[in-house]
Length: 151
Image (cartoon, rainbow, N blue to C red; front, side, top):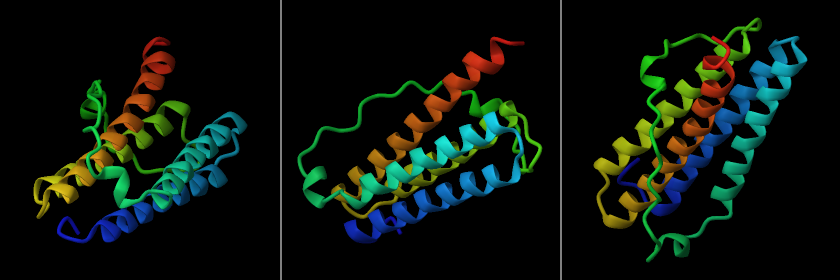
């Protein structure tokens, strides 16, 4: 995919965002805790907005644009276990699953950028990787604020 056209890369990213929407929506449907269900539906909504942003994107957005801004990597994901989603997850577990999911997407785009065949593809994929890092960063801050502060 890294050697695909701009449109193929964007379509691939849109598919990944839709998978995330479906993942969070499905998980929300499996939990009975309203606060957790609301948090999962908010995450699904964020992913749907990311997909919409990709749908609105054109090649012109990337040509000559600034590189993505530097985003601090809190590195919480590296210490978190891989968890299988289940209906009775706690908020901490949901954040953990979400953080690990965003980490996986970030690494995928970063790898694709590293093997991209031209500068524009590399730029698009690096920006997508930075977006996923930003999503993870938001979730890690929430984890740090809500979970680490409680312990």
